[in-house]
Image 1 (cartoon, rainbow, N blue to C red):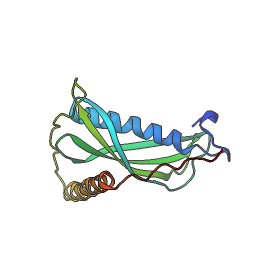
Image 2: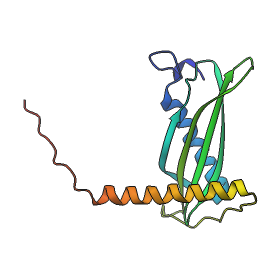
Image 3: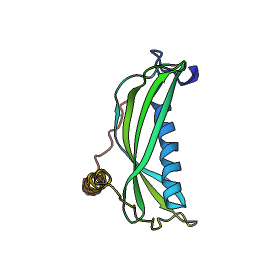
Length: 153
């Protein structure tokens, strides 16, 4: 991470890390779907420890759930000094990506091949997160919007 990534206290700005994670989610989802993808949501981004300018951040992204046109990408990252040494976890998040065709509309994606019990368990947890997102979106759409307040001048 470089000085332009720093926040006001000298750590790496969380937005810089989120941008990297979004790029990784795009690459991971595009490789799986073999099509263009767009970000639909970021779920539960947990910043576990700060990242300092000059550290190297390693990201790991994997598809953990696949719907009809959406894919959940689980991203975990670790930081370590540029000179090496012990690394430590810094962020974990789930990103939902949607495959889109040339028209910009969602298109079907290949199913996920699950070969281990761990992959099957993670897929079921991903299914539960996807259902929770669906319910949350439905509730947000059904809620009446609040009237805008006018400022007194």
